[in-house]
Length: 268
Ligand SMILES: Nc1ncnc2c1ncn2[C@@H]1O[C@H](COP(=O)(O)OP(=O)(O)OP(=O)(O)O)[C@@H](O)[C@H]1O
Ligand SMILES: [Mg+2]
Image 1 (cartoon, rainbow, N blue to C red):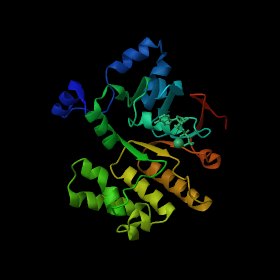
Image 2 (cartoon, helix red, strand yellow; image 1 turned 90 degrees about the vertical axis):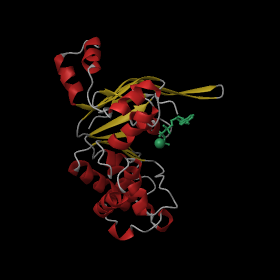
Image 3 (cartoon, protein in one colour; image 1 turned 30 degrees about the horizontal axis):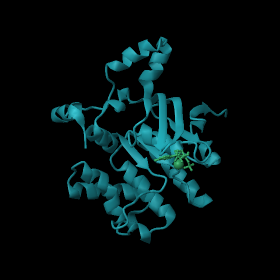
Image 4 (cartoon, rainbow, N blue to C red; image 1 turned 180 degrees about the vertical axis):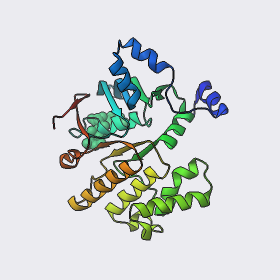
């Protein structure tokens, strides 16, 4: 792993606070921003600036994100819709620091995550971001409780404390009676709720949910979405949800359509 010098230095100081940095003002000035735009940038939880992602597979190149721009304000619940293969998962992965862009930048609370080395980027994900993956990626050999404890254990939280917190979050998603079950012993909807609990246990600021209601029947999907909405509000999160479900998307604060590598606001 190459975390680079900056990473180790920041770690050594224990000082990577993923908050605004001085460069923000500079780059806004560089963009010739008006004071109103500047204010919007300050309120922003997430900004993507000219974000580009190209996948290279053998001789073929796929341009998935094409100088995409996005500003998500604190507390917003945003839906990203678009055809299969449009790049929704790619966008969430890049915004959450799971994948690096080919070009452009991602600012989270004004903090440029593209500058982080691997170690700090991992810490950023662990502390700031809750992910719900398209294929929820629960660890099959662990119980629901252990799966939810995992982000805290990675962070070095004591086992007993991690278990207490994980139990509380599982109760909050209605799974208090299933904590000893392994994923294979849970229904699809229950597995999605474990994934939601795991995403929230570390008290993230940003929730990125990739098809959180995919593979669920209509009613279970509705319930999952309502739960997500409720926890979004209760935890004062900023949430970005990729979904094919236009009906649920319409209940978000804004719906953005990803097409040809760019986002456009869909009229309400
Ligand atoms: N690791 C990869 N290597 C090469 N190409 C990739 C990779 N991941 C995704 N792609 C390609 O990038 C495009 C966007 O994929 P992505 O998974 O982001 O789409 P999506 O909008 O999430 O689709 P879906 O709605 O089906 O989940 C697709 O054409 C896909 O084939
Ligand atoms: Mg996807």
